[in-house]
Length: 488
Image (tube, rainbow, N blue to C red; front, side):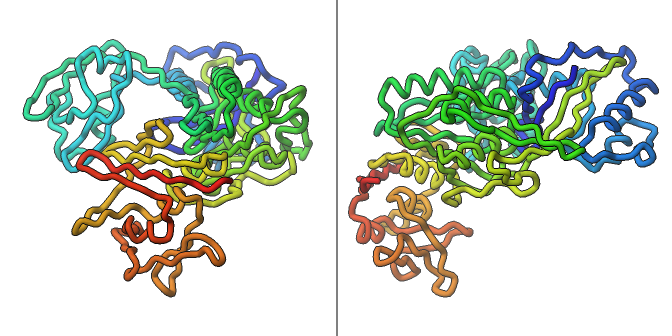
């Protein structure tokens, strides 16, 4: 039995991107067998060649599919999504889909002081060992971290489950030596809840097997709490099980086609939604250039059925379908077998999806999405290593501020999004325009605007002259911006 999936490789910290299962093949594939010898056999090579010739979307001929190794066969396809998994890579693939890894349960950041624990996961080995948020990691396994890249430090920290690693931390004026025992860490694939102001926020990191159930349960809580709107965050989500994407789409779409699929013969086999539900509040989907596969399937369907608007940047453009084939002689082959189109037959592959509201920047995208979902009042807290919006803390971006001669500056795009306005760069005037029509305001060098290393900042007192609904406080620990918004 084969298992059809969508997959891609998008983010370094999500080693392998997730997969998607087609509706017609809901059961897991037969348990793969693993050849005792590490070297591939002639039988495995034959099995790989036979599967590719039979199902690959390209329809490649036998004459063009000749090579002495599995890797050589796959190279002939010029297809980054067709892959062969041995046992180790298969386990890695599965763990990637479920967001599992062996580590210590800490989120690492970097600032002028070095590598810092910006978040320590509750119940993790880090907590057990005594690691605290704000500790600086100055050595791992006896190796000083000074001069390392952040990926080198995380590489040292991660390791085999059950093994121990020594970590030296700096806490204030103290240096402490901690011993942490690694274990399997399972990150939640769906997180969020009700923000201040009555807007629901649900972040989907992967369309894993359990994500649809988690999503439905959390959405039900939001409905019962009378949510006024919902933001679904699919940014940097590389994909997941298609059945999961279908079940999430069923929360918003009653009936219809989820996707159209085309095989190498051009046959269209639509995947249908039946007996779905709907919501009565506005829904916004956040996407960016790393939103792919299942993320694009869900976004395209919600757009085509006018069930949600998308905010952010054009998506990745991963519109092909893969199937998993466990090989009798050992291993698993993932093969591209179809291309998919949106319900309105929009092409996704190598094209991507355009958002309804194009917005740059992690924080501006979130603020714009919340505004569009119906949030009127904004409270944004900018800390050194995180930021808070609506009472939720985020670690996915820095939110820089500048203090100069007693004047406080914040990023122009953040300020524009906080008041619910779009920003446009005016090249001829070297200034930013915020707002539209008669309500458009220009900020230039003489009116509070400055450019720092490619990022535009606006001085808050000058911004308040045009947008009196903003207030702020600022100290050494954090900046708090509050905005009384207009009714949407």
